[in-house]
Length: 212
Image (tube, rainbow, N blue to C red; front, side, top):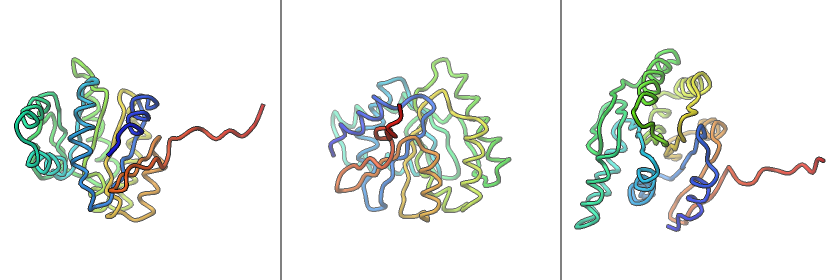
C-alpha cells in the first residue's frame, strides 16, 4: 500500500491531542500496515505506547513476525524494546514492556478511574511518548455496547489526551453504524484502509464558507 497520503496527514497535519481512527474490514491484514509501516515510523519519531485490548495487538504482532525473517526479523525485535504497553483484559503482550494491566470495565466511573491512572503514568515518563496507539478497541465497544462508547466519551471529555496523538485501529465489521458514527465524531481524522487502498474519510481541508 502507498502510505504517502497517510504520512502526509499524520506527520504533517496531526497535532498533539488529536484522535485519529484507522478503520479496516475484518478481512484486511492490518498487521501489514501497523507493524511494517506505522509502529516503526512512530518509534522513530519519539516513542509510542500501545493500548492492547484483549491481546489483539499481540495477535497482530505474531501474525506479522511469522512473515518476516533475517534482517527484517532482527529489526522488529530491536524495535519492540522501545515500545510500552497498557494491557487491557486477557491475552498476551509479548512485543514490549507492559507498564500497566487493566481489567476492562464498562461503567463510566470505573473506566475514567483506569483512564486517569494510565494517563498519569504516561505523563510521568522521563521522556513522554508522542503517540498512543490502540488495538482491539472495537471489541471493547462490541462487548460493552452503548455503555462502552459512553465510557470512552466521558473519559476523553473529562481528561483530554493533549500530550500525544491518539491512533486507534477500528474493525468496523463488528460495530453497528451508530457506534462507528459516535467514534468518528470524536475523531479529528478518519481513514479507511482495505485491499483497494486508503481513503481519507475525515480530516481534509476545512470548508470555506466564503465569509469575509
